[in-house]
Image (tube, rainbow, N blue to C red):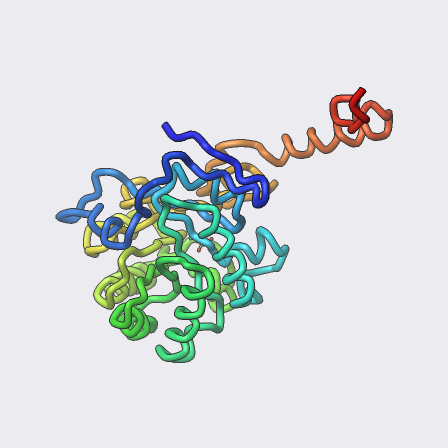
Length: 289
Ligand code: KIV
């Protein structure tokens, strides 16, 4: 059981003892042995230093997802997300974590042009944030890029199935793989990404039988989101699972109802300010007598 010392300058809560070593890419890969993962990999998204601090002790991996476009910036999709956003939030999450492996999403337009473009973008993300890996969306078409990056020292997480950056092509955020040809394509995508060297693969919004097939056939761990409990791990958008939003996809379980709790706290604060019952002497500086 670790305790925390607070650095009042940065509000950084340093665990004591400080975990000796962060989770590594080989350690994540190793979790899947002979096609099975005994201890499922726990992954959540984080975009800020404080959230990273809170999640870090419980997670194997923290993902600085480009979902920050909607969650933090109120954008309509992940498409307008920039490298600057990913680098700033990625660095904050690395500063707020000690134990989990931090991976940062490559934003739309930063990697699809060519493997060389992807290398320049991924190198910038790693240099500016200190993260250990990047994630990029796409299957067979992205395999040469994933190979190019991994052969040059950049660990890559693949992302197949529902790929939100392709929302305009897909026509929405519904689950993928309902018909046989799409199901076959998703399995082929996952195999291509695995063969190209991805050290794990996110499978998002796919029919359960597809997720199971992928998890059974590819070598790297498969992290499900809206996929199957039998995947090698799970990821959710933290704000979704904390109940921060009124509407969430069907595959999200709300582990809390933070939106109403925050609303209640703000309401009580407003009432106390208006009735002058806050602040009390306890929260007021007075000369020492
Ligand atoms: O951007 C994101 O948060 C993601 C996860 C949902 C996997 O890609």
